[in-house]
Image (cartoon, rainbow, N blue to C red; front, side, top):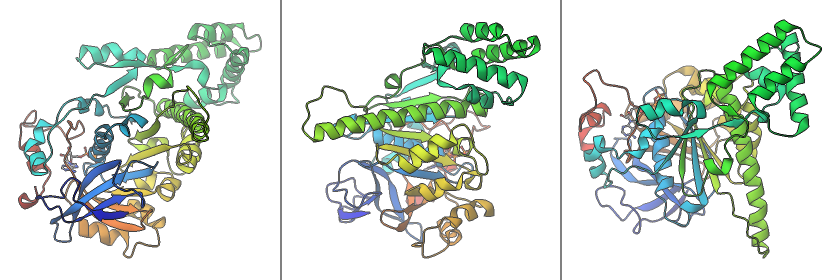
Length: 447
Ligand SMILES: Nc1ncnc2c1ncn2[C@@H]1O[C@H](COP(=O)(O)OP(=O)(O)OP(=O)(O)O)[C@@H](O)[C@H]1O
């Protein structure tokens, strides 16, 4: 954490300028590329100085907390701050959120429901110019609801025979599994893209399988086609990620968790490879080579409900890529990962130990607290339970453990500038201005 005079930056609150600038995540940050997270929260819950997160370097951030205490809200704040960064820093960064709940498209709209609170924080409601992608087969359903979206698909050839078996929960050594692996591997060997029709034709050309297996394989691939997620060519990664842009990939229509995990695995793997290549180009340019190649931006990949993709005690289709490439090696190519979960106990333990920043909202389950405490850094002077008790039950309050400065901070996350789509619906009907404020249970004197 770097501490400098805060004169030139956003006031912490109530126009106090004479406090120090706090940047979590990068000791050397001299005051550029700052994401405004909120304010320090003192033990009496009064407001302290502004807290910033560094956006110049890649980070692995874990956001956790029990249901309804601010995980997706905080994710949204970080996405907003990345989108509001000044050029040229913003142009070098591309954000992508894997939206499992279908709640982030609302960020296009300004958060007028919390306008009063925002004013108290000297902020204004503001929507973001986001792009929302949905599985290609579901575009019409969104358009009917007047939600502007773009089609997204993955090329069928991205998945190996064995990955198809795992996605479809088929035993690889069963007659059906053997047929699938043989079919897909034979198509992949040819090297060209192939369609669903090509897969089905290839299945029926197989001379070593019985007709029942062939019929079952055909049915499976017809079902896959109906998900609308796979196509012959697939969406190019540069269409999805561009410097200076926030992209939402809404996968909430995919009912099968394995399919979501397969999609995340392919995307994360491609992002990692693109960044490795961009890093090579960057190094060559640094060494004086004149290259025309456009650099792929530094990526911030956000994943909500991370326990689906990185479960504890078993491997999902995305575990290997997310842990070994993004979490362990993502720093070098410039791939940041922001993961959120309700259940740290259900999350792969490497996520806690490999994250350089932990943002912990209210947690009450012993299992979850224990899961975090097991990887508790030695510099925490008290146990996590004691810190969480001090933090209390305020929504949006968070404990931030920063591995860079080896410090722990109690923070009140700032209100959202863009519309938050993840709150609970209210039986009284759609939100009117002011209701959100009462729901957050923030004592009046601190709003
Ligand atoms: N920083 C904050 N300031 C004010 N209110 C907040 C803040 N964070 C969260 N809230 C309130 O809490 C509600 C729930 O937050 P959020 O939707 O982020 O929950 P969540 O932890 O993601 O829950 P779930 O696990 O069910 O998805 C929000 O709708 C908002 O009203």
